[in-house]
Image (tube, rainbow, N blue to C red; front, side, top):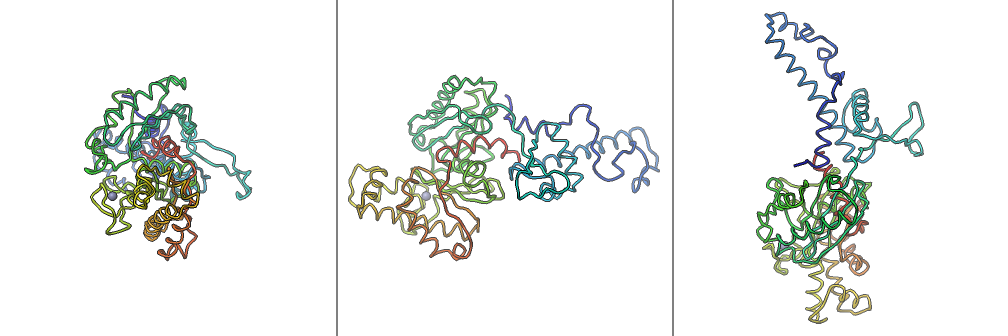
Length: 448
Ligand SMILES: [Zn+2]
């Protein structure tokens, strides 16, 4: 089985180029000295009886250490660029704690290997034009394609993109994903076969397939881990099954985590290292980016923000709790509240929205209740994280003007941290594409 693009990338990072001399890093006794030379503190050892076997053992240890140090430098530099996007050498040295010379040597090494790109950034007036020209360094993306699969509760959506996340072809199929995991996986595989043909992409050009599922994942076992959510997915090795069907490497993660990563890399969160994304759809998903990376928690179940309690005695939820946020602010909740208000028996969230937009007081009250629930949850999140940005996305976003005023009032009332800081609560910008954008970036995230 071929590895993901990023795995291949990592292989290139840690594998020394043929004929490359050991880098001039480390202590003087490791640098430019013939092996076995009695230098510094090692003189004591070297002055003792020194057999050929000892020399061979010492050589192996030194080579390993030099190689390990070089790898660490490369991974530090690439990891920092992966998290922050673009940095100058000076910024990179400050961020990694490496010396300027070690940073320069490491950068030269990575540029030569084609793992890093360099762009002239002196056009930026904020960068002083003093001494050496200041250039921005970024990760060089491997050429090829990625495939993103969005398993919603009621749909499977697939898109083929290049490694800049430009979508080349996409398709969607309606399906009860929660109840029919195997059928959903089979549908995804079918759509991928179709799309590769439509986009004219050869299977051999696909670096990686990334799939988002709307439930908590056990990161070690790579399976859905909650016994109460996505029942038909429990213990199903979805990534392995897809990989077997497609003959391609597949990685799987929570859909909201991927969405949050997409917004951080390509959307409304580009200028932020710390943000929270709430996806308001059939349910409510949550993704947390901390220090530029997805916050997974120790098992992988962090960010289940839809199941935080906003009403201790509220409606019962499939997760076993009652009064969960998604029972009071999702599309499903809007429909349920609309029914309770007597707006009709065969409602959709869109119908409730249209009634409210048309001035119906009962329908407007539904969105006021939604805003209160969201504001209550957001106030808690703001108090916990003190992050600068909280984004909302998903199918309920068009109703922003109906629920946001109450939501903002509620956050302001309940959170002193919000009142005293320039915290932003805003719309996400990538819409349904966020997960795909995150999927396109996920191969990097997994390894940095
Ligand atoms: Zn719940």
